[in-house]
Amino acid sequence: MELASLIIAMLVTGAVGGVLAGLLGIGGGIVIVPMLEFALGFIGVDVSVRMHIAVATSLATIVPTSISSARAHYARGAIDFAIVRYWSPWIAIGAVAGIVIAANVSGDFLAAVFAVVALAVAIKMMLPLDDTNLAPDIPRGLFGPVIPFVTGAVSTLMGIGGGTLSVTAMTLSGKPIHRAVGTASLLGLVIAVPATLGYIVSGWGNPLLPAASLGFVNLPGFFLIAVTTVLFAPLGARIAHALPRRQLSLLFGLFLFLVVVRMAFRALA
Image (cartoon, rainbow, N blue to C red):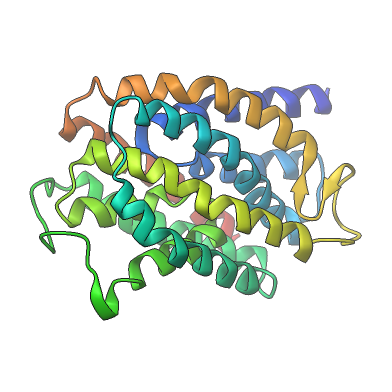
């Protein structure tokens, strides 16, 4: 019964994550992490490694999800490749830094980071600030690498594809929400690949890990969630391009706020 419940939970998680990947330009991790962490607790996985497993497995699923979502957005001409080329190296470096930090902190710390960042972004997206820009374009120069570096590092700690942060940064820099979402879907791949490899190495040989784990990546969770996210990501992309900009921003912010409540309870408990 527990195994059947876990399988159903992972399939539902993957379906919801896939729709969100296409809809919001996120890798689905912002829903996969809290749901998978809960499912791991249900089958008795030690609390000290649950958050690490959830984050690592989420990042692994983001690889195929980002490919599926990016292809759907590319077909609609919604990816800004100039931003992708400029940000990608710094995002990858940030992801490596995030792995180093994650290997030396507790699961409660990861949950707290998740809740704080998601809350900040939720507030921004729910406020009527669609036409509010902090910069006329993506910052460059001396401080240009800061945004992508932080995006890579924090996203690796949260187990997300970076869309939560990069969509916010791009919209505040004058990029339309639909184009920001499409670009973020491809940037998720730049985060997920090095981050997944890092979690495999850092978790290798940990005696508290459940069976069928590759480092901190749980293979059954990866396969079940990955299949459903890939199938449902194009549906999310179609919905995104059918929604007005304000509705898309409100939906993004509302969903993040609900996730914040769940992860705050995890961190404080």
